[in-house]
Length: 276
Figure 1 (cartoon, rainbow, N blue to C red):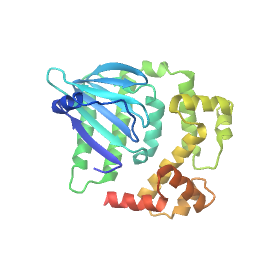
Figure 2: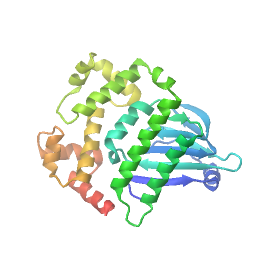
Figure 3: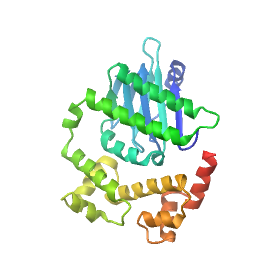
Figure 4: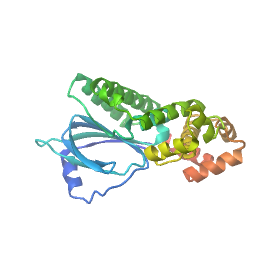
């Protein structure tokens, strides 16, 4: 559909085709959601491999090294796949990092509740296939899909929350504080003090979970929001940079180009071309 969002299904024929290719271990520059309706997958992630039979949900965060091999079961394979850039649903995406960074694969029971996830996927697919798809509708439906997945996960796997490590809890708390403050020009010390810990300890946790330093995660969150505002508003570039804590347009543009590979103006023009 666009570079921001893509949706497709994996069928038994696709599973056979993938099995005949190298299918090397790799990482993505986008987020990936897979809803397993029928069949199974062999999933290598976090340096371990396991088989998961449908129904299941897999969420692979950007940059995770992994490999998925679809498998037919009794001749059936039906995987529903959605790929999207972080800035497509920025607030939801950062919440997902905290929830799924070490729990990419979640088994579900086959029930009317799981079927609702498939129905939401179908609604997204219908909108994406329209002659003139409305990406704002797709964004809303995708956010709703993740809310429903999280609701079902909490009901079917309450033990997952009780098994959270101290590091996981600290990282979730950090992301919650970040969500409230990333627009401010605060440094790493501010976040460490809010969590009553040293900068070194917070950096070690972030490196372990996200393979990024605290400052890199803060900058990533700012860039995701910058892209969101450039896509969804007509506000001047300087105003967007100022809102996100950059002192002037030149500094904001320099950081944005370093992270995104193009200037804010060029990014906005490209997104407008895609959206129209």
